Image 1 (cartoon, helix red, strand yellow):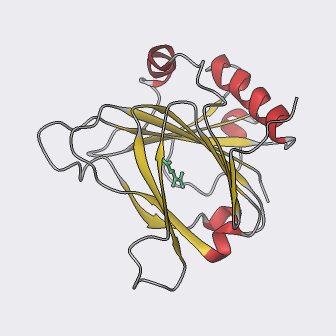
Image 2 (cartoon, protein in one colour):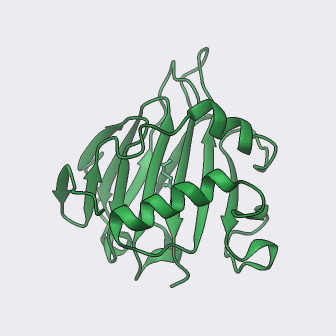
Length: 188
Ligand SMILES: O=C(O)CCC(=O)C(=O)O
């Protein structure tokens, strides 16, 4: 059954809580040995094509979602059905919790997804709520145009063309717990 957007805005649709029943601790445990560790955000990538999958994300570990983490395939099927789309790979980010600093280690700066200039991206949040901002490309004068406080299970569907016009990012925030983000994507 298709999901109905909670809010439609320019080139993205927001769906509140459509995957709120997913168990965060179970997801974290399934993923924690997989993402590439670094000082801040940790990332990895899953695809139906396993290690043979095509990816522009240099240096990122690539896994098969069916063989390695079946819960990802379960989520993927729900997202494909809910949005009536067909996603081929998912980029996973873990944003660690920050208690004793200003959150600079747990963030992603404004950017556009250059791999998705002509395709859509389904971005899902799990875990601790975090702010998420959109800013128009080429307009640094405005700090942000639209801000969400994304909750566990919320989905942002960035429609085809969104990346050409909009930047998005997760700003630093103090006193947050861990968060996992999935972006389901297509090989354009
Ligand atoms: O964590 C998020 O909500 C955003 C992730 C993101 O910007 C990306 O994967 O390109």
